[in-house]
Image 1 (spheres, rainbow, N blue to C red):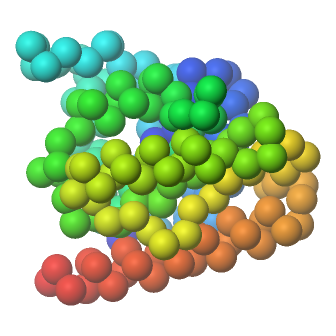
Image 2: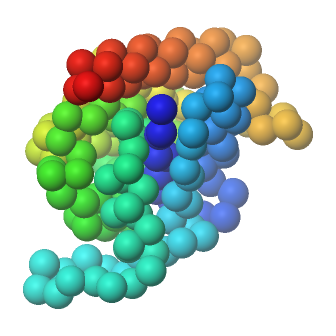
Length: 180
């Protein structure tokens, strides 16, 4: 199984990206192949429908999404929405490479939770013909702290992440098996 994770923040120490690093470590422990695209480290040019980008970061993004059996998209919540850098990345992606793939949506918010961004992210996934995982992950307030090993300090948050991730892995496994 191959999963592509896209960290949709342009902040160096974004908690949404830290959460994706934690998710990646959980998946790797299970022997799942993971590609992490951190949009802070590999920024993309602004999308334009008028031109085809040959930028190496765009090529890497499209290749990683194409080869993935499933996707995990993480965003900070800004003004009740997803980040501009994640939206820009998703503008490069077409339904032909996302269609039929399960997608887990993840957010980090300065307030309690980032439900608005998750709802919008799931609408984008539907328009790309992806399959939204029935679970999502949102952390906020005191849940946004991590230990030196990269795990959330809050035990209920670790449990919630594991439960949502297990649901996503089961969905990805079932969809991959039915495609064969």
